[in-house]
Length: 309
Length: 252
Image (cartoon, rainbow over all chains, first blue to last red):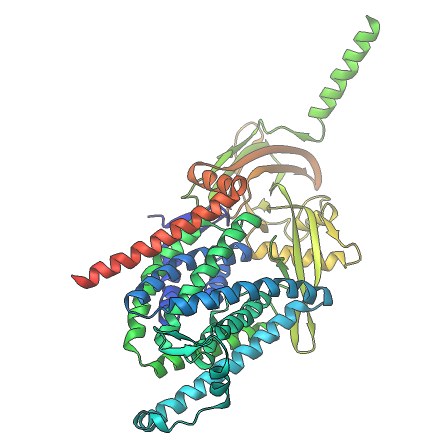
């Protein structure tokens, strides 16, 4: 029996179980860690012959479904801080708009693509390495700190956060914070995400964990909520400006990814916060190694299609 | 009247010259299927080409896709890193090209007939900016196309079978991948006698999308905003429905 299906925009046929399986795998990661999964899905799609621009745009479309499914699953588990998510989203939109302008300037200066990639590698390395080490140290000392929570010394960062105006309670996250903080960090991630051309989940999650001090399970759900809106915007813009969204491809991927996202959300619930952090850190480091390898190893073919063509 | 007759004769002369020039039509060449419909279940297609020639002749077949243009990046090594350094635009390149030779493959090593083979495409392809080394860029382009299975050959695939009356029959099967572009594909059969091109026959294969594939393609290009919004709405619906389905499964 023929299991192939033709993708009208990619103009390429694919093996049905392979694409649905890829969707499931990436959806699993999305539900487990609250990441969009574009960093993994796009290269996988390119590997099976999908043009890069169609791969990236169609992936955004399937992330809409996966993150909607994941957000819904986490919402039922009480893991979505909508208030925080909206502040981060507003900041992200503002930062993303500024970032798009910044990238134009960087491109005029030359070698912008390389600068973007190397910045990404350094950031992923620092964030992933820090999360990994911190999580291992945390597992070792968790029993002591759990017994003496009142004895933890308040850092200068926490004192600064408390001095900011408009202190607001974020019930779901269990923290009191000025909305200026998520707006600022949302903008910061938005700028980076626009420059790097990614959704920003990998940067946003550590920001939520370490700088906003949100509980890891709420971080995952809230991140998915934010990714949902980012990808809705990207999908519509890509479809309108570049005609690169292949809906048939997205549909096949999302059949797998929505199921994977649900399974991932349940698996995440069974893991302890530090275990989840170590797994996420490992994933971040793996992506960093992959990107670094791509910069250091000679490509098989030195010519590649220009994005948007 | 005389002038009209002269015009008519000149017109007929031009017509005869134009149609009976170097390439003749494909009346003695069969292409099956001559029309390819790309639907949602399309996964590439095998095309059969056959015909007959006089004994002692050889046949070389080219399948040439519609022309396309594209922009590309060329990577270069700077320090320890490989990075994109140059942009290049390539125009008038066939989107698909395959060269098929007789099974004996005796042309494969020394096919030096002008205008035949991937190397001959170099003359018709335009590479911009002109300052770039054309030969190097062309080689990179061919490697890229070969990796996509859109350029191929020479393949020793044409089979001969002797028939009566001093003729022989040729036949070949060639698989067109699913990633072929829409448009008119030219099947160019060159008949060679004693190393010299004796005749050329031209046939066509029409490739076009049909049914749902065509409808989606047209919606995406003609009503792109509506297409994008629809894609998002369906994704949201499927995502939410899957969430509800999982909830239902858990509660029972």
